Length: 172
Image (cartoon, rainbow, N blue to C red; front, side, top):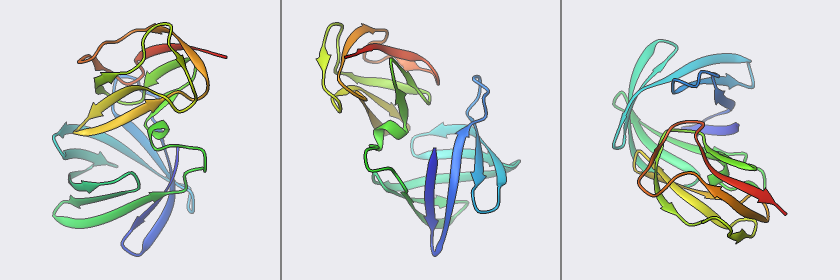
């Protein structure tokens, strides 16, 4: 996924993707202006605090405030404001968190807090299927286009791992 991240007066375009290891919270960050790559590994997450390793340096990140387009946080005691941009016109912030196609799968470990779709439901594009929560942040997963729910594989309160299929859809 592509992001435009602004910290203070500095703006960078980055691409963030999974490292491909299904057993870890490891991500690859590519800076588009220089092709510089970083490895980001989430070591521990609790409430609004993350302990991450970025190219083998450890950082403590405390989230202070979050909106759909910005995050204020403390990183090793330094206050940083970051805005995230460059979303396409038709892309919702929820679609940036979990992918949805015929199989709706989580892109991160989370808890199912609301299940709004059941087997047989006919949904319109943009209808909310499921609400996930991770580190006190909620993500609404929406139908990518008109569809019918074929199968629901989770229930409210379930913990889902990264890549876990939650719902099967049939597109109309």
